[in-house]
Image 1 (cartoon, rainbow, N blue to C red):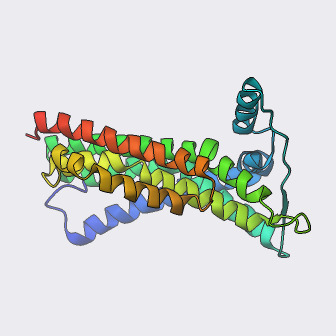
Image 2 (image 1 turned 90 degrees about the horizontal axis):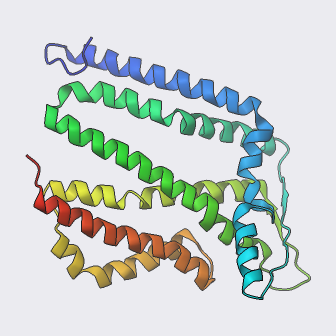
Length: 263
């Protein structure tokens, strides 16, 4: 049946949606089971920023050696604080991995359900927004995983108020921080897509964003401080600089949009 066919009743549309959700659930669950079985591979990726040999740390170490100020290795021990917590974390991360791997299929199923109800030009712009939004989200996640989270983890994990106080980071704290930072940066990277969409709808303009650029800088710094709760100015700049670049890219996109309005 066609979900966009106006002859379908409400209950038939509901059946179509239910079928799409069932397919999404089964595919995501299948990938989650596979991820659960490949525990070593899954957690080798998740726990990689814990090790001083991680690619980001190795790169910064090499840069420091070139500048004549070599950095020492660091070590942060992760601990488990509950009898069943490691198994629960394993299941939770397998489910997250399942949905992440299945995300292209999820978007396809949702778009397949909605697209028949759209006109040809609406379907074109919906495809662009969906594809670009997904790619930008992935870029945000990758930036957080390879740059922002490692710098934050190294700073907070090795920070001590006194040599007498050792850092023992719980596995729950590590995983939850990693997930939240990746999710927030993925959402932040949607800024150009949302601005492009709002410009198409006539809600904002390039001149408006240029006029409030100084206000945007302050908001960006506040958001960067929330995403990375550290007092390290380097980490704050590492987070805020991509966000500011996204803002400037949004202005360029909107200016191009204003020259080619939606038909």
